[in-house]
Amino acid sequence: MPDNMPKNVASRGLWKGLHPGMGIASKGMIAAFVVFTALFVETADGIYSAIRGWIEHALNWYYMSALVIMLFACFYLMFSRFGRIKLGDDDSKPEFSTFSWFAMLFSAGVGIGLLFFSIAEPMFYFDNTMPWGYPNNPFADLAGVNEMNDARAVLAMRVTYFHWGFHGWAVYVMVGLCLAYFGFRKKLPLTLRSALYPIIGDKIYGPAGHAVDLLAVFGTVFGVATSLGLGVSQMATGLNHLFGIDPGVITQVILIVIISVVATLSAVSGVGKGIRIISEWNIWLSIVLVAFFLFGGPTKWLLGLFVTSVGDYLWHFIPMGFQIFNSEGASAWQGGWTIFYWGWWISWAPFVGMFIARISRGRTIREFMVGVMFVPTTIAFLWLCIFGGTAMYTELNAAGGVGTAGIAQLIRDWNLPASLYGTIDLVTGISWLNWIMAALATFLLATWFITSSDSGTLVITTMLSMGDDNPPKKFRIVWGMGEGFVAAVLLLAGGLKALQTASIAAALPVSIIMLMMTFGIIKSLHEDPSAVPMPSDGKAPDGTSLKGDLPR
Image (cartoon, rainbow, N blue to C red; front, side):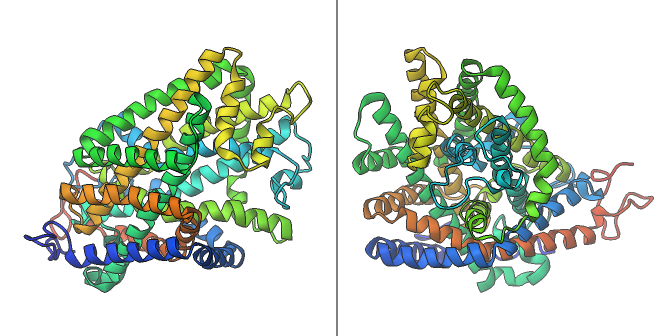
């Protein structure tokens, strides 16, 4: 495999440090989508929704199968003889401490979405009123658990874990592993195109490779922008809850500007400084908020729910991955929730996978896969159970009867941003403590998003610079502020929902690329001289030393 292929990166001029063609094409592509969506919101929403609707209903079997394939490929590689291979040279060492690595993994991989959905999603599956015309939880209905009780709470958590668990993280693991392996082990550019080298060879440096990376840039920019729109709506709700500030569009645009500036400064400072430091602080502050829910709420009940629901998930997650609903109501639920989530994981995978690869140089394949697969999911499960469980317990024990505490009604009204604050207000009877925790949650919404945005900025500029893991700072500024600009324009035009739909639809071609990547890395590992039993002299036929890769 070539070590020094020409990168076609400009050495001087306006585009110095970036691939000029990629830079121009990416900006033109994004500008075209933003202008079209902003000027023709209803038309764009109709087109994107039609494509997404067709995918969710006609290709649900494909999405479910694709994630199952990647999940089983992850487990195969995790426990295979390839596990001892380093993602880098034989003597390379990890760049970051284990704690910093986990903090950045979690921040980039889940971040703001976990705060937004941690109460809303379990509560939706716990409810049984079917406000949207389809079952709230078809798995609970199949089990005959139709009443809002402890058993339905366990099933609500099972479905929530399913959407935030091993299947989704397998997508990130596979993309991150491919990029780290081909980028650090095989010395190819740290871009999405490199993972296709075993299949298309040197064509990765031509139009096919450019198209793959442009698709990744598209998903990253619009994924970050729509998530920012999602996050600022909840932040604005928090500010209204805390200070009575109008949560309208003006407040949300101001929040976008502030967050974009901070995220850009973080991206300019680099991974080892801004991104790492903010990620670590996110973890510590999140522990405080989680402790408030755990010890301020029904501690014993929550811990019991965690053990029971995780065991229930582990017993059922493989058959759930193969479950295709055919009845009209359950099929609508699956399209609106599971297939939506699978599309969202896939659309974010180029960005998150690239960032995970960037921070994982020097780790072994097994260390990488175990760390990325199990640590973030365990933390996410604990978080979801404590937050969602607190809300469900509150509804179970409401003074006016089950389901009358007010949190479930917020979800029925689809006021998802308010569900977090509505639950915090009911955790303890100490109003000042609840207020402080609501303020902390609002602050965390901002800092969690900052770590996603700065990571996204670094990933975009890395791809456009053909794999330079320290891309020019001026382009980090351009793209960091550009993400915020896209979010603000579409928020003002009312087109954020439409573009989120487009991002999910774009997951279809990305999923095909991911399946090719999965085949490619397994093929390459089988051909890798450092992945076969060691010859007696410790040398492969091409002279590669094997002593750092396999046990003696």
